[in-house]
Image 1 (tube, rainbow, N blue to C red):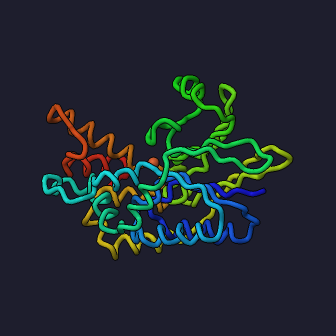
Image 2: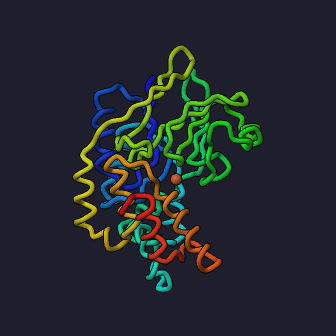
Length: 286
Ligand SMILES: [Fe+2]
């Protein structure tokens, strides 16, 4: 039994298509998708339609990520007060404009965690961040893991959200994170995912990273005006596509730090562009 596990596509349909092409040649029995289908990249509709097609062809176990929660919460709906914060809110607004009614209904139908039971195999607990919070990271060696894992019945946990390929065993649990399809943070600019092989009642993980046409994604970002809609955010996306490893979160954190240092407060999403620009110059060299 082979289960394909993909997470954090973030709207990168080119990366997603390359994963699906690769998996087409494997004997895949089911798909597990761990959330964050929309996000940084153009033509969100293509990613969503690929997921709907996948559902018709395979058993699929699908949960919701924080990016879907933003859209369900209406975060991307026009809020004129936020017009001066395009690097913070621009991509969320773009995704909102490209999220259709049927996508919202689909997001609303998704659970944030699920127990996956397959014949003669140990059950899997799947989640985006952690089983209790969509945005909680599971990282190796964290103090919080002991308490978090104690609440989970299953031995095997699949999680995403950190965009870091993870294979860890702690406090009696085995945790696998396939990395990110659309936004790899390891400097590889490849699409990451995994196949879980069910062999004689045991799960064996197999991690993959495939190259894809990153130039095509950058061209689509230009064509869709993302460099104007979300200037610094899109520069970080481009840098990652070109093999960088500085994440959006790190640049945002630095921009907020600079804002706080200068004016004594900084409340997301109200992060002025000048701090974004300074953070980008420091961290991306531009
Ligand atoms: Fe996430």
